[in-house]
Image 1 (cartoon, helix red, strand yellow):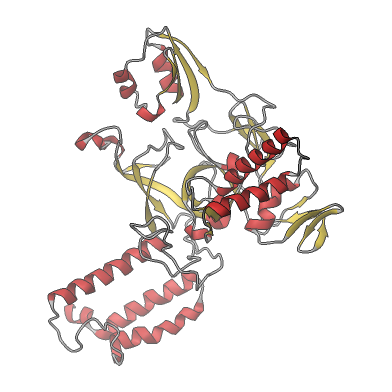
Image 2: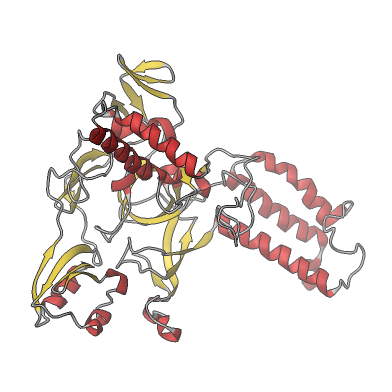
Length: 463
């Protein structure tokens, strides 16, 4: 049996079968041309593929063996990371308390099917920037593949915790890579408009001021375009599927007319008033309220993100006078999607909003255009122009549009502290990376040494 397993024909057959199954899964039958390479590796051995080894020498040197092991490890880890499972870290509080800052988790690529990389020429284990640098690209764009998703175990389901490429991260201003450039353009555009108002100048359109803001940012630092798979990874809960109708009333989300299923660890911001004395920090530690979340507005007033359970626990303290949830009322305009004064929406009150679905056609006019403009232009690659006589798509007058792919709506469980779809809109299906599976390590940045480890979260599944 041992001799059979060492037989070169058996090894070749096993490798070829595995390779063919991968080829069928990937769906690119040009890869079949790689079979002769496998045949030469195992059978004919005409080409010296492992050029770092001495040919015909059974006992290789120490360094050669290490190089051999390193190459194997890098290739294996890259394939696993690309097609099966990838490690991810929770960097912000947008999903607290469902997920905690410092959680290290595994993301399943097989849950929805792994994406074939758009930019295959990339430095191993680096996302978009070379390790140890601030702005050096870790990838080459000489080869760019179109969107293709392999078969997976299922589709995105409502309330899944999903990792995806940040949709507004397609364009990055290197002067501030943490902020999306579109919010920066709106901010500076508004400042230019205010400047004209103060000077008594004739006011221009928002488009004019936004273009001026773009040129201003470009003059200060490089503006870089990133491929889909090299945009920042975000993690949120999928609250809306293609075709769903969403509406939020005073922070309560309704999906197709039904209230969203209760999420145990959902947080909102609350104003906590005391009788003038401070809340005992030890009590806040016991409740798991991070130092960064203890916003003290005055000697007797805090603003903190809290779950309902923590609200009830704080109410029991002797020095607490009142706890009131922060609420952005109906009609109060906030800079949220679709960033139009025709929609007086905010983080707590928005909608109704129907999520775009592949094959569905919607009517277009000046009012509905803000809802779909980014889809038409950025996500589905059309040329769009708004003229005096109507809307033009690819040079043709259009009063409707049919979506080419599906779109999702993602929101964080920390509802008042989450940069999510409310601030940049839909998540296209080609941006979906995978499903959060389980936490393998969790570190509390407010603690030290072994106390940093949250032992109760290790190997905890993501719900």
